[in-house]
Length: 383
Image (cartoon, rainbow, N blue to C red; front, side, top):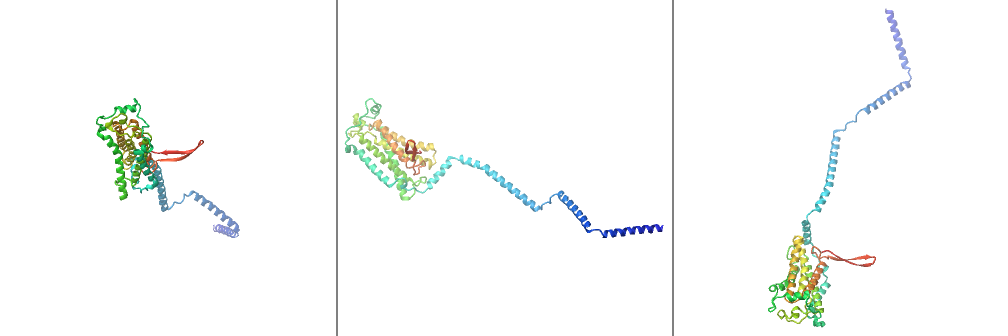
């Protein structure tokens, strides 16, 4: 038994020594190859591990910053959408804003505006011409026939049976007393429609010269232009009346019908009616001026602001024309032509010196135009 154990021990010891010797003599390259194989296996296993592992979680601070940035971007995007949505609404509000508010702003701007120099609208040379025209018209009206030699009737009374003749023949007052129309109200209306605007504009202009401010707070600082426009209207109306009376020496109805209760003058100056022509000239100019002031400065509606001045002034002018026929001073054709001349002068003067707000600007302008047939000037305006 002991012999078998010792033999086994020897055998095991020999085997151990042989293995130890063999390991000590193993080639280093083999060892290195084994090591590289093991390391490559480890790397592959580590790559697989990295692919399988989830991405590392970011710190909590970075998560909060990213969340805030996203919230900020979302808020900016919402605001941009709201602005885009609100833009059409703003446009619609502007489009539907009341006309009264717009006109109120225009009135405030007009009143606060600086004064426009008189020379910008009425030149000194133009006013000198107006003064000359006014004087010449007066001379022709009262002495033109004597100066020219047209004292004899050159434009006779209407033919018997005509509507012009019949109106004057039948429409009259008391032939014995020569009573006036509505107790003389017609004549008063004619003088009032000319005198009241002249007095109002003249006093306003004088006040402006002395105080550098208009009388009323609602007036613009350019009321002096209104005075000079009225002056120009009267000047050219005077010339128109003087020329027609000089060229057309026409007997008055009381001369043709021998109604001495209404007059006994032998001056043949029925055509055109002087008072009627001046009344309609003043009515036309003053109606536009008062209308623009009422609508643009006082806030009246366009309907009321137009109806009141035009109805008042033209009503007084028409009353004057009727009185001239009734009192045998003029025929219907005399007052008709006189009214047309006066209206033309008054409207034309206002249109060429003031805009639709009553500001001293021109409403009528001339523009050149060219066509295949030639070139010329186009007259344009707004009323």
